[in-house]
Amino acid sequence: MRRTDPEGHGPLRYGPPLPDQGLPVLPELRSVLAAAANRSAAEPCGGGPVLLDAASGYWTRRGLRAAPDRVAAAPGAPALLLALTGALGGDILVPRPCAAWWAPQARLLGRSVFHVATPAECGGVPDPYALLETVRRVRAEGGDPRLLLLSVADDPTATVAPPEVVHEAVEAAAGEGLHIVSDETWRDTLHRPHDTVLLSPAEMLPDDVSVIADLAGAFLPQGWPAAVARFPDNAAGVSLRSRVLDVLTVLGARVAEPVAAAAAYALGEPAAITERLTAAVRLHACVADAVHRAVGAAGAVVRPPQAGRHLYVDLGAFRSALGARGVGDAQDLEDHLSARLGMPAPGGHRFGDDLAALRVRLGTGPLLGSTDEEREEALISPSPLELPHVHRALTLVGSAFGDLRDDAERRESPR
Figure 1 (cartoon, rainbow, N blue to C red):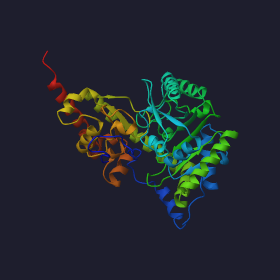
Figure 2 (tube, one colour):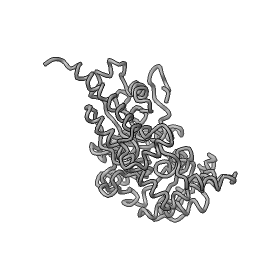
Figure 3 (cartoon, one colour):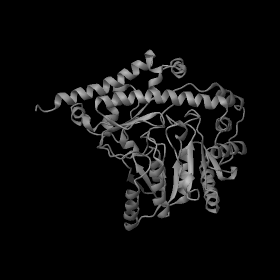
Figure 4 (cartoon, rainbow, N blue to C red):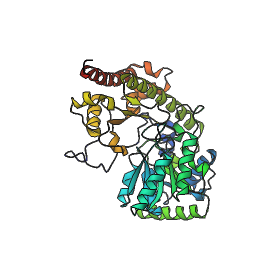
């Protein structure tokens, strides 16, 4: 990732991609894609019957009943969000921090984006009182807030919002007449699914919530873009879906048929898919816990990761030590850690955090190995942290943060 404004560290228009799986493509997925490779066309805008039926089944199995005519597909969640934002109009509210690709969609349409603080226990969902105050202030200043974006299983913080927090935020948003879009890209990557309760806002207020999920979160490689959306099962949902399809048509946002075949196969959740997903989540959870221990032992602040393939680290405690290395803000920190670790370490400014705050997102995918053979070995190993290549990567992470801790301790004034 390069600076978008190397002189002034100005506003960043584009953010990093989703944290990568770091794993070889599942053979069954390769076979499905290859079998459809002679299909040169693209799906209809919004998705073809087979893909929509698979998406319908996927949502229904998660307690969100969805007929095929209440879902839609697009080549990636950004296209879906752009279409939803265009269809709904008005200003957008998002938690701080939030997924790096949310705000650019709104800004592309000339919409204002307002960040709302999150509660102490999680990211992804706004504090309800801060949300109400932000709505009041925006309206008092002549704004028109209509849409709240949230993520119960969050990028970048890797937290899962407790049901009571989600309920309070959703009730507050609905009470102010906001439509809610729940990004559930990471809902199938819970590190401890038997101990973590994930409640979709659509289960609470089905008439006021649309749901989107990028399949790169749990099912498909990033290079095979596909995402699905579920709309409310009422007249308003029908109208919204129609407007979204209009926008997707204007954009020409259609899923390539080979990718659609792979997406439909994955959304059907056959044994090959569920077994790989379980193994991949277990591996990333194991590595994320190891990174969490190493970073926390050094004195950085990081919430325990609960979902996804990433962690969100606050290095404010090392400001003086980092300053001595020429690191004064999140962009500097991104540059420094990306070079030190040999992997992307996007700064918090890319996720809507303050540029001055020293925060970064660390992904676990790059720590699994540099070749498909090493990554496959990590996937099937009962003790992946003991593999030499994984151990080396984790040692480098621990060393980088340990050096910062040691520098900070040396710089403390004598007592």
